[in-house]
Length: 116
Image (cartoon, rainbow, N blue to C red; front, side):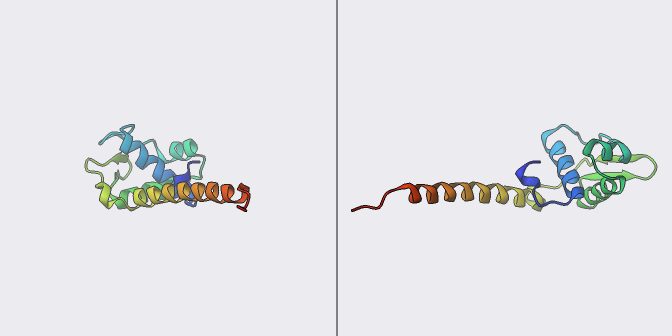
């Protein structure tokens, strides 16, 4: 699990994985997603968890769902400035880097002998 997925519910992790696949071009506009059962199997989650992720992505505009046909990548995915999850993910990465740097500074202060 990546640091950007820490703290996310399972359905949010599945949704983020699909968003990432769309952003990277692994999933292209108009392409059909696997059926919910297959999606659940791929991500190691329950069927209702996969369905919830698809519904969230539909509501956000990432997917178009056609009843009895399936879910397809939208032809017009949300603009990056509209993608709050990406902004949160970027902030989480920055905070993690800052925490690491702070730990290094604190460790160097503890290991430095006092000046006489």
